[in-house]
Image 1 (cartoon, rainbow, N blue to C red):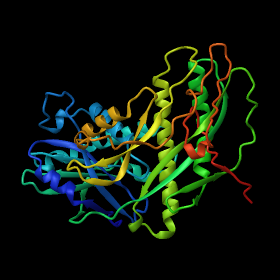
Image 2 (cartoon, helix red, strand yellow; image 1 turned 120 degrees about the vertical axis):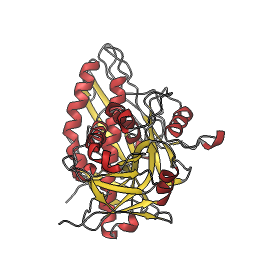
Image 3 (cartoon, rainbow, N blue to C red; image 1 turned 45 degrees about the vertical axis):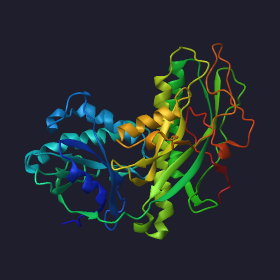
Image 4 (spheres, one colour; image 1 turned 90 degrees about the vertical axis):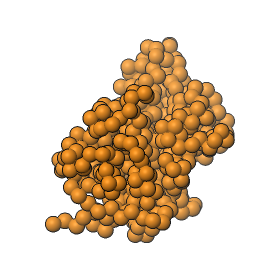
Length: 403
């Protein structure tokens, strides 16, 4: 028999579930260790799933449709940084857990489906994404836990170690991944086709990139082979994209062997990079409104302190993607409401931009006559200001001659 996984959980989550008086279902947020033999999974916080209809209470599991659960989960997943993920679900119910836990397979698979929809660029082989826990609060207010290692396995009982004291702080890592891409396009359809094709070519670069420490322990630099195949920029109908994406990831460094911390951080930063690109490209697709656009809206990234239901810090930041017309304060307030956390009682929003606004108008599109629009910046290099002008993936951070 294989050794059971070890899971540590914030005691605040247990206290919140025990204090809940009505039926509730929601997501467990934390980190699943890639090392299933000696690693430790973490449950850091929880997020309740709101009713599908505002004035209709949920009183049993059947009141939560799979479609609604997926829609809510996708919203939350899009805010999570690298290394932080949905690690399962919880249920507060007056029913006996034995009566409904065997029926949870469809809900667990709905969460897995939501992950795949958000991570549609994700080709990295990460088996821990399928690992999910279930925590149930019974009528006696006792907590029982179950574990489903993959989509084919039924939830089986497991022990979770609820911690009375706060869990050890997570180590934060950042990386700036630059983009330099040129591709041909003349209309909305060809823009998205070109994007999809180019992305498929460059995902391998993300997978194969070497990671080294930056100037401080919290910075990671990715090294790739230079791409010498870029076509000239003056060809009619060509779009040139320059910019960078700032990536954020968290590692449970206290439970990760020191020699593995950098590799773990790089692993999570790549996840964050590909997920962020997936979200931004979805936003581009959603906002293509003309056959021959002159400008495509580009999402920009901001961070906010992720607080628990009880308004306690979780130790990690949430990440928002906003197109140029979006208001950061409004987006932050909406996020707080969905997480059922306070927006600091009317104080100034704590959300901050982590990618600077482009110095000129949003680049990246073809004009109606097919001429190319290119982006130029009046400031320092984009690797410093993290300017966003993304349409397609290319991982070119620093060009070195690798021997």
